[in-house]
Length: 606
Image 1 (tube, rainbow, N blue to C red):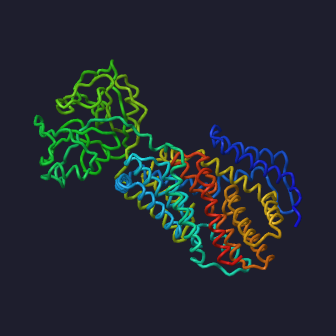
Image 2 (cartoon, helix red, strand yellow):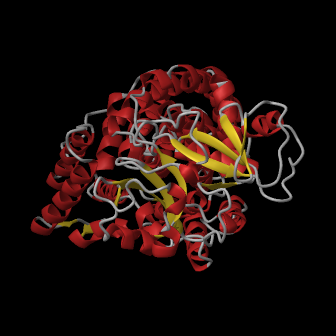
Image 3 (cartoon, one colour):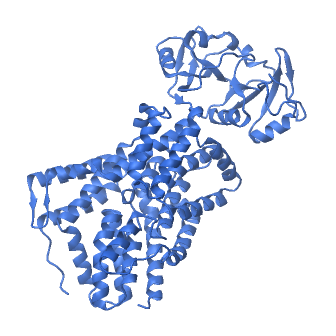
């Protein structure tokens, strides 16, 4: 078969732009947003100046803007907003604490369990909600165990893609291939007809993601891990009715974890008790402890106690819509030299002092209760209050508000946020609503029930994700409508003409793997399925292995972040670069491609 002629000028231009786009996406010195915007502008301006019309299709420059309303973009953005609600309400913090302890004790086993569970769940439900649920859990666990997320989030996301290959309902790609093949006269695949090849290849892939991938991923800093590492001193106050009243201090430390180090106990106003393991806990006891802000917050939640700097603090602030802020004492401040217990920030600004970072590091052992501590220049107070009150403090000259203000979780809304997320996952899992509609509905309900403020929802969106999705969809549409994708298919048929059946099958799967990382998995599936059936009929061979080659190849969306929407979610949450997907994805794709090609060739005796 002869090599097809060079395609029309528009198709050739789009093919060249595709190559240029992939080159730009791999340049870390060029922002991904800039590269994506360049691709979009090049398509819009190019087709506006040089319109494309053919018998089969017509392209208008405005068509390339349709990606801004595409179902994939809507789904990803809505899921990012819903995921932010889980973080904002602290709904997953209890699970994150337990997971963090497990991760600290056995990180290798924890990673393997994460990969296996993610893959298994993805075989029976859309992997996007699974990734959305697991991302904040894993980041929270990494923060608490002081481990890196770089070797966790990306392997987890890729493991869900592998699991989704195993059943007819695992991904929309599988459903498309099965439906198109059935429409063309092939017997419809049943749910588990091709699970065995995926289990064999997937097992090897999970081992790679477990043992090798974490070692080749550069260290990245997720946006939500930018937490303060200052050591603060505070008092954990035991309330009336606490379940550990009358128990020994050792039992309380066991419940909080070995990281809790009690320096001494203040009982009443003047009694200081050494923190011996057999000291009994009384109501109103103040445990003087020192640690980072996130660790102190963990102790507070695990023990069910209050964090404060005064032994008898009253009138706690309302729990909703509070922020944490770090404020520094300056040399000219009226608070310099004042005892901490005499500072009246709550009366003047509506702010509650939770902890003190001493300019001289930890407090000496002879220091009495924190309320007796005289403030010095460069001491830092950890305060909580409403955003308006913190903003009002910034305009005063008394204190310097540092750039580390964070929102406190709306814990009262946590059960509701978690329930809404379960519904978001369940509706597409049972085929009631597509994931885009489900996630959009969930985002609306989360905002309407005040689990999330509009400010938080807007901050959850990523310009980088939005632009790369729109640019990728525009590029894929241009390839298909100009005939560029068809030309690639014809070149493939010409190159493999007369080759052994096993080589044709393997080459077809590799072509689909390349296309799915450039165009989209669904586009690759729609283009490839008719080609596969035509090849099989021309060779006089069974249709099933060639259709499965398309199905498997179109699912190998590992090499680029825009290949699948969960890749984009993982990239945003983990702070990954384009090249991180290339480094991990290419070996994984080669491993899966070679293994699945061998299994199909042997199984069908090609």
